[in-house]
Figure 1 (cartoon, rainbow, N blue to C red):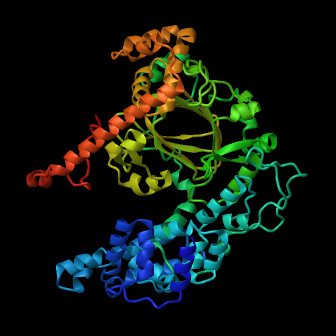
Figure 2: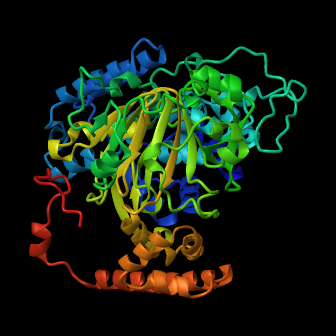
Figure 3: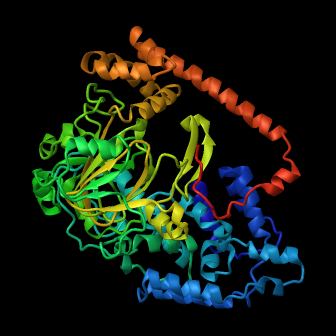
Length: 625
């Protein structure tokens, strides 16, 4: 951190050489070596030695960027209008402009590949000194390492540093880290950090006590993100994208009966018997929405926003934000909805609490399990893997909060009951290896196989969804208050909250998802101690509470693993750790061997020429098997 301060201080006022010069910059290069020597050095040096963009060819685009940036700074233009303005300017730019710089095609190609952070931008260049060659992602990453005093100092150095040092995610991290969830939102995260609660509070449970004797709220007026000092002439693709997604109108993602989805899951408006529901949807592993299925719950009225705050305002719930110690931050219901009122986070704080029933028993008393989902073979055991008897969560989130595409753990199915707000769901069947727009890569050490890079739903709906061919569109539905949604085993699904929402969800295992559950459990048991320990104890517990289910499981298990586990004593946790550690070592050796063989195998020229392009449009349903 001290090194970063020295670099920023000594370079902010220093004259910056032309980007095409080969002059060495010892402080910058040393700085890059400290982080990631090889990758950052190569990328930054290629950026420094690149030719600048042709001024004439891109003048209209740059002029549009400057106009839009200044309009956004004065809040006289909406993000949607800004996007349209920039798109039209880009469309008017001649495609052959790069060739006008030089007749040499290599030089023209090099000009086209100049990174966006190297585009002539005098405000950014002069304000960052030698650090101007760093791309924005790295610059933000470095600022995350600084203390609040350093951020405040930097924000007074130049327009560019003012913009970067006022980024809301930086101050959100500082605020949550300091207050451990005990914050009273003041309109912006920076203002919240600079105006904390006026007296020490009870943080026994990691969140604020709302007792008037222990806490006094700051009486200063709430701040607005629009009250920042304008910085005309500055632009950043990364920050503009963040801003757009933070203020996007969520009504654009809402579909109505007059504007239906291209593909939609079944919706049941009337009553349906348990037998018919099981035969049509559970046994066929089909998602379905039941309208108005929760009208008999007390939560139907007690969990509406105002009533929820009135009844449970001082209760503590866990969020998805995780501290440096690996624990989830906790917040009171009253503080959380105060935050929801005027937050503008790109990825808002989200309450996702699996222990709400133990911490706040009154919440569990407000609802009952739907009659369609009484059978759950995991109820018979309490284990650290599922945190209690029920595999359940209370989910509370503001507009734009989300759950990315995922498959529910251990092949389980789930039901989700919405009591407040609106949710947009998207589904892909288990036959998909991954939803469109989600990248996958081998990550054996961390996940035992593949891992995925999955975009935020707002980003996915904005950048991926409009480009999908009809055969790759998801099944979708809008869930409204009082609706009950069934999520089958193995289905990919994402959730985007269109407004402030309150819901409860349970996961379950039954005879219809038993096969998928057992396959995933056996695979993960090889590499995860908790799953291995849970499997051993759960199978022994089934002998007493659900012997008929255990018999079906043993009959289905052709490898005889279940029968062997039930016939032997329950192994200790240390024995489980030894088995898992040995499996991991074997898997890592096999994975490294396959990598070595792949590097040593030359790729045939004909094979490379016939390889399909990554941008090739799919012509048929993908065979993910």
